[in-house]
Length: 154
Image (cartoon, rainbow, N blue to C red):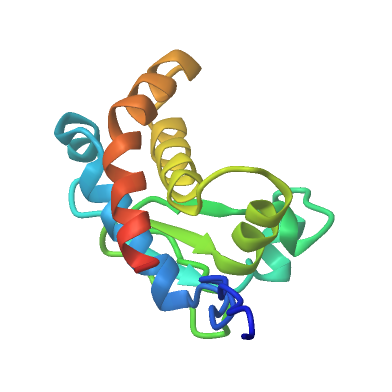
């Protein structure tokens, strides 16, 4: 009798898409404390493959893998990595999928926790929050974001 091999859940898995990262970001943002979300009002989260060369150069990066996300205040141009940048009417954060996936591959962290960390830091730094404040916000949001991230894998 032949032994049946157990199939890994990753056997047919694909790399998370732009849409998948966008869903994680929406879930992560919803899991953040309301008073923190209120800092930036109607935040728009966008996902691009990489930051543009101009943004990388402006921020002193060496590679498009150096930047995981970037906050754009209302009234500034967004950077979705394409040539069709537009003026932001509301605050936005652009997440860079390929850089995030590279980071995820290198470190033993859940993808949802990484996305949450990026959002918290991009928003919090814009409003001058301390490292301690940001850590408390992440801890408060972590369990819900991880639960939501696991639901995407099912």
